[in-house]
Length: 245
Ligand SMILES: [Zn+2]
Ligand SMILES: [Zn+2]
Image (cartoon, rainbow, N blue to C red; front, top):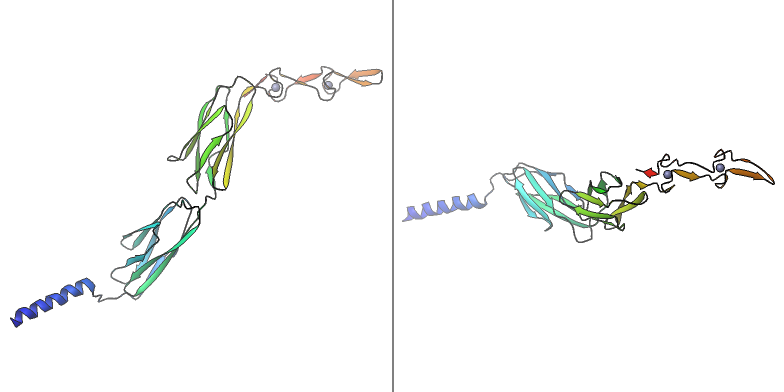
C-alpha cells in the first residue's frame, strides 16, 4: 500500500511539474519592433520575439488588435478604426518572469488619398473610365454635382468608375469629389464637344479692333494690324475646326 501511495505521489509531482514547473526560466525577452503605428483602415504587422525561455505568451492586448502566435513571431492585426478618435493600447508579452511591451497607436481619421490620376478626359461620345483610388482610412465616398456624370465607387478593388453622357454641346469641364473625414480630393473631368471659345465657328473675334477690322484715328482709319483687317482670326483653341477634343 505504501508503495502504491509513493508511486501515485511521484506521478502527481511529475504531472504538476509538466503543467507548471519551468526548469529553464527565461533570462531575457525582447520584442521588435516595440511599437505599431496604424492608419484608420488598420494594419497587419509581425513582431519578432527573442527570448531564451521555453515559451512565451500574450497576457494582454487591446480588443481592437487581434493577436496570434507562430514560433517566435507575434502577428498583430489592428482592426479598422470607426470610432472617429485616435486610440492607443498596449500588448503585454511574458516569458517566465520577463515582461515586454508593444505600444499600439491608431489614427481615427483618414489623412491621405492615393489616386492614380486626378484628370480624366472623355471624347464627345462619352463612355466610362476607371481610376485607382484608396485612402488610409478606407471609407472614402465619391460624388459629383454634374448631371452629365455618374460616379460609382468600388472599395473592394479600390476604384472609382466615372460614367459620362454623350455631349451634343460645347466642350465642358466637370468635377468628381472624393471625400473622407476632413480630407477631400477633386478629380477634374473634361469632355470634348463644340469649341467652347468660338462655339463652333472656328473664328474668334479680334480683341484689338473689337471685331470691326479697322482702327480709327479721328476721321482716318487703317486696317487692324492684329487681325489684318478681317475682324477675326482663326480660333487658337480649336485650330479653326470648331471642335474641341
Ligand atoms: Zn474654337
Ligand atoms: Zn483686329
